[in-house]
Image (cartoon, rainbow, N blue to C red):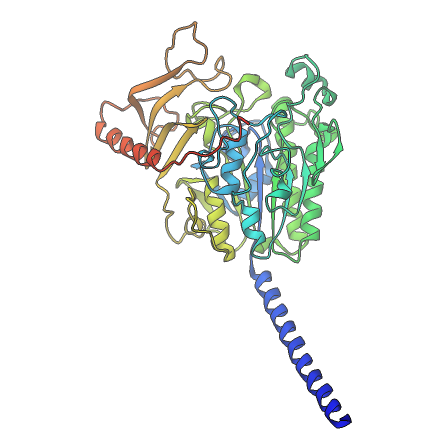
Length: 483
């Protein structure tokens, strides 16, 4: 019996040792796999116009860090968002799907408000949720605007942590004074906007004078704590959306005034992110993308930005509303230069999945494509279409060089934005069904000045067919913005 027990114990020990060794081998293999996966950082500005960066042509706003980021990486000149306003645009980026598919767009309420009960449905798969299932640590910093109540908060959608404001910085306004006066006096107390840590409010009202600085500090801290990787960080600045705020160090530093100060602080923030990546030895294994959620808000004149040579602004479907200044950086991996091919924020989810070896589910329609061939200079993207939604309706479609406008309507701030038709003066912001549609070659004419519909009826017919096929594939879902 004693002999039997001794042998049994010895055998058990050998088996245990073998199992432990097997476990260690699996752990080591997993660690090696994780170490080879790239990190992803998306920096998302709010209401930044196509012409607001030095690298995109602004003559008096200095953006040395973004300029250098573009020189070391890629400047994308035909990069679009999913919608010309905050909520649906953000939904499109994080899910890789047009907002119409998730119920995150509306003709009645174009974004979510503090009294909204809806938000991004749990059935949606975000970038964070997809990557988290493949061993990624995830963090959201900044503006969310996809639902400020559970189950719609970032930590309900695959992010391990959240630090930021849950909706736009002009909401919860408690003073009747106009935005201009409040911004010029830098009265952050006029907006009872909450600052949150995960699901808890930690400051209210948020002191927005230091918000860009604090977002940056949080993102830098996350890079350092997650450096063993892989990680995905979504840094969504709540500026330059009105009301404008800047840290003390950035007061009156820009030739472009208050708005320029705000952009130059965001540029500083980008510099801090890139500096940290270098210091932590993560530079060559991290893809960093900078872009904006929609075009500039013309209503606020000098407190809003510029779309440069593009026509239109925030809220509308001319190019200035949805084509955004975009920079990619990944040292040693990207083919340096200017990328002029079409791409959208919806392409980020499938691209990140491809680069990280993450499987995409096949139970839903994705509107994004893998754009890594464009990034590496090895081929083309599958994308040849951009569909321009305003609310829950298609207003325009770009196919290749050509863009057809089926419906036109003045964007936010119609008194200063480019006029699109000649509606009766008593009708403000008139909506016009164009028959025939307006047609522009947006490579030759990116300012959309010269309507060539009469010369190309065959192009209009082709794009009409695309529209019909697209609409036939849209299935009705519960509207989240109207709840």
